[in-house]
Image 1 (cartoon, rainbow, N blue to C red):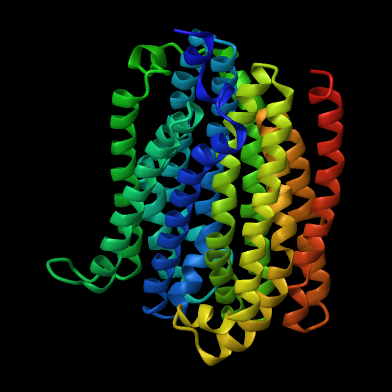
Image 2 (cartoon, one colour):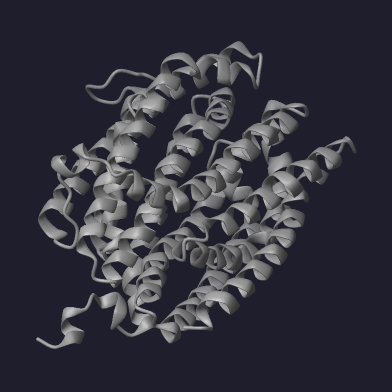
Length: 452
């Protein structure tokens, strides 16, 4: 067998074909993920606008859970993919096993929050008794039964790190489809199921996540020979390996967690206008995920490619992967902008929007969508920060965009007393993000890639 045949496909397959092979299944799975998030909110909206607002207020904690799981997964993938590129099997296995230990710790943190912090968190954002009741029960289930979420993310990241993104797609689609099927049954009491309302939406979500995690475990054990996960490996955690994972993972975690803080603060700004304005913000987040998720899937698909070729010192492949991915991300996001600009009313009507919600939401979607193509470029630029263990760069960009610029801009614009002005904070923040991303990206390429 030749050396080329022995090497992982990330080092030898034509770059464009590789990115399509790696990223397309993940983009499809992320689209399905976005679809089931949208469907989830659509069903909740038919309980009432208060229920939709409650789920919006709960979102920062859901996003924080994703931050912990995804950030840890990014740290693992960077170390694991580079180790495979360097043919260091022992370190690759250690990365996988130590990450599971971290995931168990993450899980314990959110179980405790679900037991003691869910209701106080919702109360900190509203004094409406109905919204508090809906939001508290939703967060209670989502956090206490978070084992499915964290295990699903762990097993999917293992498949992605070794180039098996098609299998990762199967896992995500399975969880999404189960959630979509169970949502109406548990929310409205269809067939043998009781009518549980918002509680049913939460149960459907965690049940789908748990099913996906079980499938992910099976596929890793049966179809992923590149990494060996075992209870023995988890029983002896390595401080050195965990430190390497956290070195990349903590900045990535904080980068996503910044989004939770931004959402929490933005909810407060909008609640000062009305709960409907907050509901519009929640609907926007669900709708924009349908545009952003494919690009995030593209990002997740190219991180292992960049990390592997960084370990293998293949500069030309790194450049080609970045050029192709930036163009693809820009085109995807441009389509999203066109969609939001042309049919904002029908998009909002999917969520049982009232006349007031339509009046607020239509100009909001059109204003915010201006920044989508810029955001796509920034997301792909951030992929090389993750792949090259420079996640601090991504954290700097995220903090500047969402906390240093977006929230202060939104707060200042809110002082005009005109709600529509607040939405302009999003395009303003993204222009700043592009500027900072470009500076950091050029510096990294000059210092790390060019000397290869």
